[in-house]
Image 1 (cartoon, one colour):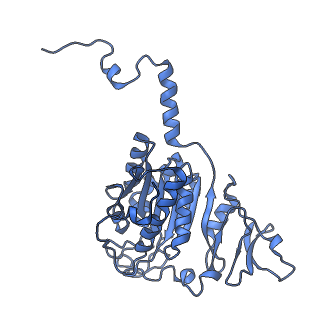
Image 2 (cartoon, rainbow, N blue to C red):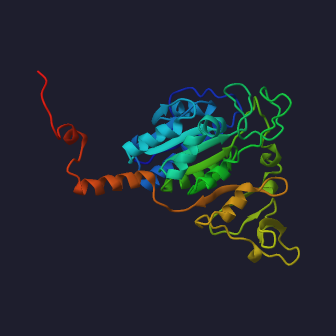
Image 3 (cartoon, rainbow, N blue to C red):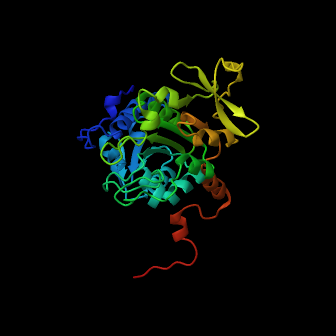
Length: 340
């Protein structure tokens, strides 16, 4: 059966605030799943959406798929259990920067470390939105909020750095307003065998409006962001006249202008998302505007064994020589008696 985005829309009224970036992320997911289904020959019954607590946690209600609304920070644990118990399911974890990087931080990094074949979409608006505007683990240093009235004194997490530090095999980043780019990232994530983390830089119009405006604004986006594509030169800019090279002397990425100082397209770095060495990937993740463009697109996608495959293979191997092969045999083994 060939699906359309409409096939994945539930009959529930979407109750996010008008103008919230979550609406665009929902549209991106519903746009991506028909292509995922066709590419991987998935029926709609294979999809499960799992969430914790936060504005993003409403997501399962708006999808005409299976869903599970968990508790604060525990979505990764639930998603892990679902995937291991039924590996055929396509499991999607919807989470915010507070839900996944604060109370759910350990679950987040260990799901990535284990390389469980789940898809994590992290909505990053750099604030706690559902609980009315407290600073989150990704809030910028100095951000004034209800819980930091004089400005937060904490250095923020970068989700991409955590993914790399946990030996992540897939990392992508997009903007909420870039619906097609987000969809493309999610299609790539679904095809990836292992934990696929896609961070969507999302705007909270009520409690942190404009937090990404320094590079996400429509009038400056082309000059302040770069969409990387595997196998293609790293070019960006409104006039497609800027690019990235590796400054070997200082071991960092450097922005250059094509046509100046003898620079041609041939001098630019070509993106290799499949490189197992995370060095360049980490440099791309850490680029910050306005000094450097913010990297978007699929930054890393490397192959490795997955936790769910390893569990399956281990069970098969143990069963070959085990005298007890299941719980029923275990309960009936050894000394037993009947109570009358």
